[in-house]
Length: 120
Image (cartoon, rainbow, N blue to C red; front, top):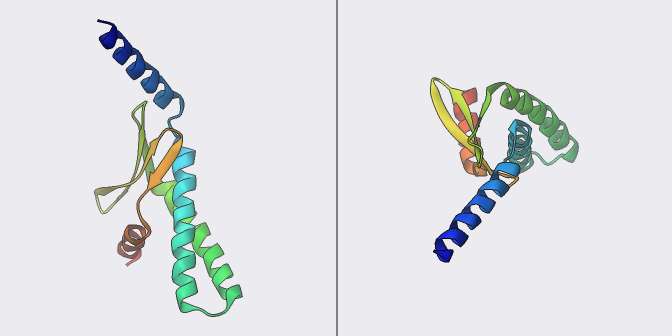
C-alpha cells in the first residue's frame, strides 16, 4: 500500500512541476526565431564571402522570419506540455514541443525544407 501511495505522490509532484514550468507562446516564438536565425545565417554564410552582407541578409531574413512566425504560430497548451504548430496550405506541421521550461524545435534541415516549401 505504501508503494502505491509513494508512486501516486511522485506522479502528482512531477505533474505539478510540469504544469508550473510549461512554456508559453512567447517561449515557442523565441525558440523558433532563434532557429530561423541559425538557418538563415548558415545558408548565407555558405554562399557569401563578405561578412557584412551575411550580417545584413541575416538581419533582414530574421526580421521577416520573425513576422511570419508571429503570424502563423499556433501553440496548444496541454497543462504539462505545449505544442507549437504552423499551418499552411491547410496542413498543420508541428514545429516545437515545450516541456519543463524548455522548447524543443525541429532540426535545421527540416526547418530549411519547410521554408523552401513555404516561399516557393
